Image 1 (cartoon, rainbow, N blue to C red):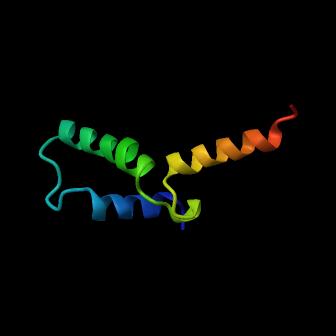
Image 2: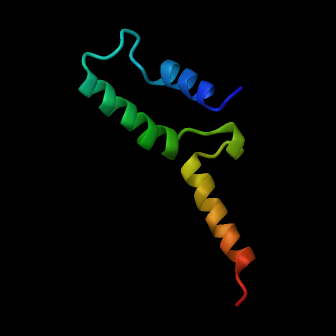
Length: 71
């Protein structure tokens, strides 16, 4: 299954109002909040061993710098 399919399933079940949005401006703001706020910062992702993308990236950067360091 392509990664975008679980994303939309999660968005529709966790975030999107059942009756949709009142207007395009509200939809854009809400979708941006979901992606940049909740999804990337807090929502655990199975492919990241249960970490949010932000935490997984931070962990990777911390460990990769130690491995690649020659000092």
